[in-house]
Length: 264
Image (tube, rainbow, N blue to C red; front, side, top):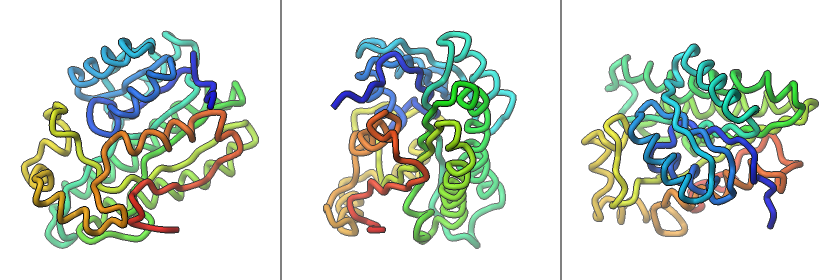
């Protein structure tokens, strides 16, 4: 299938590791112009270098998605380098599973900033250019926690529900300009054992690393009909498809790529 992505400019936030890195490399194979918007500069450069080897024109741009000036500067940089932004993938996400009443307020605020405000900032920053060109695709990472609620993920789930609702609202608002917005909801997806995890990654936290043991993975797999934990590569096909012309009449949709954890 010709996805007609070659030569298009794609921005992926949080592309330094795990799902974001896999998404970047999947787009690189389509020979896009790739911007890795990543707060961890070293991890972003590593992904950009690997993307170049796969055929993309790639650059890493340090970006803090929670800070509007940083996001604006990133978009200006990408447009100056490549002329336009055709695709935005809002991939940045963060959580630390814990009971709502046991979490400090600082963690609630960080979850809202990274999971919801980051998506709002980046989406708003690219829309002017997309409206002017009357074309564009935005794919945001949601979560099944935002579709059904999830134990120990109350604020995170609320943020992801916000991502889904905002996507639907904006799809109605900007569809007349040829802009499509969709959401992909991954299941539990962990970095592969041989992948470097940056210091700022949620998977670098000891409490999250405890999920990555073979015993814990086996326990988690039992709740999925497909009986395994997702790899980052499991998620990329849905994202690349929704960003492409092959999904040219798909907008405002939420697709779970979660091994059947939810079926909606």
